[in-house]
Structures are given as structure tokens and as C-alpha cells.
Amino acid sequence: MASTDLDHLAKTAYEAHRTAHPDALPSWDEVPGPEKQAWRAAVSAVTSQNDSTLADTGRSQSIALQVGDQARVFHTEFTAGRQGSLIVNDDHASSHHALFQPAHGYWFVEDLGSTNGTWLNNRRIFAAQRLKRGDKVKIGRTVVVIVSV
Image (cartoon, rainbow, N blue to C red):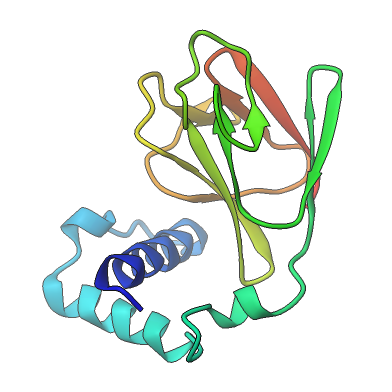
């Protein structure tokens, strides 16, 4: 597995842990080097020989979304924006605005460095956030409602 892929997975895992943790934890950028290395080692331990994580090798849970009058179901990770798997026709959305990604039986959304940010339930997100039924993800001025996960 490439070092950048491992770093991305480690950061995603840490941010999911940070979101679920009852105490305030530092952002990935503030985590000391040895702890980041421990997260990389943990991710590496659950990565198979063919570079997919154990969560990737099983049947992934689907996610159902409602965007205006359009309903969509996805089974694998996808991007949303003016380009991507979920097209958002919104001048305030970036081309590749947000990444929706399954991991460990849950779905997460992450901003991809968009100009106007990605918002979850009226709060701007700066790291991957776990999604649940009823959540509202704002991409530009467009609201994506999570129907089921």
C-alpha cells in the first residue's frame, strides 16, 4: 500500500475515533508523530495483501440519499459536486466537493477542500464525519438528506 494511502486511511480512522470519543481530542494535524505512526500501524494491520481494508472486502452497506426530487442509492464510495458520481447542479458547489465513504459498517462524509465547505446538520466539517439517517449534508446551497445507511 502506498504511504499516502496509508496516511489517508490513518487520518480517516483517527478522525472517526475523535468524533466518537466523549472527550475533546486534538485534530490529526496536532497529533504527535509517534501517535500518528501508531494509527498507521493499526490501519496497516487491518489491510489485506491486495491493499484493501477488511471493511472493503466484505459486502458494504448501502446509503440512500435524497437530493431535491432525486433519490439515489450507492454501495461504494463516491464523490459529490458539479462533477462526480452524485452531480450537484449548484454554482456554489465545487467540482469535486465531498467524498462519501463506507468504513467499518458506517458511512462518512469528508470535504475535499471545497471553496464553500461541506456542512453536516448546519455545522461546517473539517474532517470525515459519520453519517446517520436523517442527517442533512449541505454542498453549496444544495441539501442532501441521508434517507438510510
